Image (cartoon, rainbow, N blue to C red; front, top):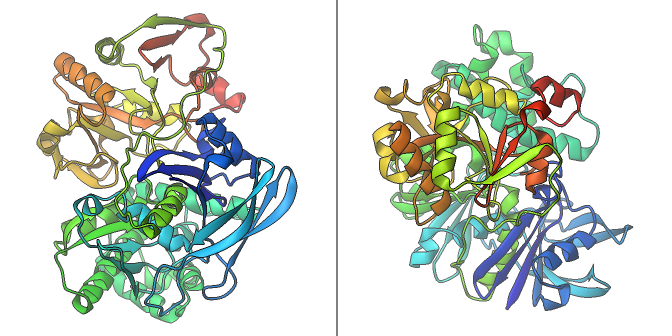
Length: 568
């Protein structure tokens, strides 16, 4: 049976599951250098994505559309889109189950979904449910047939907890506290360097601003100090903000800005953002302890999803808390996993809760003619490591299918040696990013605990690690201002190409670590082809499928030239 999950709003995507195995999950932002968080522009795109994988709409047995925000508590969603250029509205399930409901999963059926000249019936599950199944079905708990709690904290909802039984039952355990997941971004937008003097025009631009600010603010918080004495003031603001999550998140931000001198004297912008981030992390733990006391106590498995699960500080706090047997965060916890989650919801409805999957199941590289001015030569992973070591030059690496989710994990990455103190600034300059932004380390899993604390296996860059004192001077480019790093660990079984590069680089340098940052135009999804990376021209070398492409020196552009051409 072929199940096709669809996400039509921001972070749109198409995912196809066959008999419990993921075939692919394509986020439209990773096609043709589309802008990050792109919605589905036209339903005709769905047929095009299926065709690229050798499928037609008629091959699909069941279509499933992710739910979205509707009218009132639990109201159905109306998704405005286009079909063949003509406006169309599709009905879908709501954002989450009604407040106070214990039954979490409700399958709704609709018609008609126009694709390829025909109409198809489709089902829909609440947006929160699709997050839930994207996390649980891909977890080691589902694979082992174990129960788990699932925490969902997404931009438009309060953090919600669910109990998933391996036999298939799902129970809603309610919200932890009444702040929407947008709270951290909404707060940060009130202070420099994220303050916006004029609200962005249009809903899509406002959504993109909130989505991108959360990650930047998490990095910026490393410049500040956490003032624990300010937590009491935040407690008062949250109590006064009311019970409705999104207005409450806005009210806290507005009051913090208006009463800053009174409530937070002496705190810099970085201090405020760092303190609020830490405060929200404490709220999560407090709320979870309370729920655990009501439902079977600590020591259970925990899955985490929703946009807030991209915050590595909160994830690490949950993992360190000792409240849970194990913590799982999928590599696509935000809406990049919603199309896959929709397919998983239908899969669970059919009686299968464990999905067979791998993270490198995104779009294949397009074959586009290379621009002039480049020369190419065969180059295996050992030779690529030598280039990284001897030239100390970043290399854009495009290999195989793209990663699922927002993190570049070696198939759409810029790799570089981590041993130069100036490499982080160089990478941020190449990518036209602020200097405080960190660069992630990728490390052989067998060596990670020697260099990082805790250094536990983390293949998806979703937890915080401290760089051990003896290694800070040896890998300065991956050291964030607070001494931490967002680590990716690699094994030969999981990522053989990247593992061979790391092993060869360690033989040359004695360091089993490389810098890893995403390969993309500023504000766009991953590069869809080698030619895009060449035209961008941010790195002298582009490596793909055993071939090293090198820009001829006479054709090299400066960063300033790229910025003038608006392609950086």
